[in-house]
Length: 417
Ligand code: NAD
Image (cartoon, helix red, strand yellow):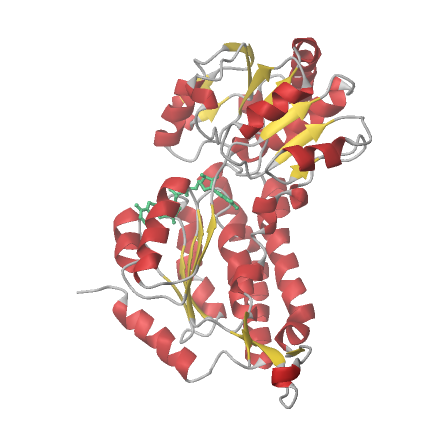
């Protein structure tokens, strides 16, 4: 017995009947989503606290306000996005009216991870609704408290004939992927991304894959170490480091490392106090499996800051590792935890070469006072550089991974009429 067939059938029929087509319907669903967030704000905050020990501040900044902003963006632009676009005619189409009509794909599957379990399911959902699709949502089974609210409460705010939330881990998701969808929006690991893409290929279903990566952070010798340390620590230890676009490792000269380590220690103490374990602002590792993996990485290089861990509450202290070799495990995989290795290089050229020898990162951070910095990084590396100015914090909006979370992939398709 296939647990998803009936639900899928319902969504397909609703799409064929054209229920999701009108601007009024789309706007009503978006407003429903907004009401869901407002009316369950406290429950959602509690769920995020239970899942990741996410503080109310982090929940607001990285989950709720981002989702609200996406809804507002879609509501403001819905009619403009839906309009046909005129295109110039050539000799062959001189007698025709030529325009681009934006069509919804049909039934979209959205598969989400656990690290921002609300944001990373709702933001793609907003795009899919705005584009006039029916949607099946598959939240992460790992962030189980948030998953529970999504499955129990969210459907009450949406048209049930067009939108459904389904539950499942790897096995059930594998079963789900055997079905034909019209679009799949997946956020998660590279390993599972390959499984999703292979399943989608069976049906020639288009996909968006929001995957992981190892994001370098280059620090030039001319920077103020405390300013750099404040910004790197903020984003590296936010959500206990479980952020796909967080700086994953620092590249700098041995002289800068000497100045950066005490500055990072000062930033960590300023953000989380003398005993970070007692801080209400520091999150926890999502699961025992990830905790054990991260604890193993603490043995790489030499601990310069932090290094403590406590299994009973899946606590890993904000940590800085030095004397790290590029062959060590911490430099071989995405860290996805509150650990920051520093690798020393002797020049900017060596740093660029180090980055270019690896897989393309999702984000690249470069701290430099040289005015030509951003252009030079853009020209020599294969990722979008985020080069925070001396007065602003690193912005994820400069990162391609984050931008790709916007609804573009599930916005209307462009087809020549
Ligand atoms: P994951 O790949 O383990 O799981 C993601 C989703 O896939 C979950 O819903 C899960 O149930 C499902 N899944 C797991 N195993 C599966 C299988 N064998 N077959 C089918 N489905 C399966 O990822 P995760 O651990 O939840 O999230 C962490 C990863 O996500 C990190 O690599 C991180 O970098 C990445 N990520 C990327 C972005 C981005 O925007 N690029 C954002 C957040 C997280």
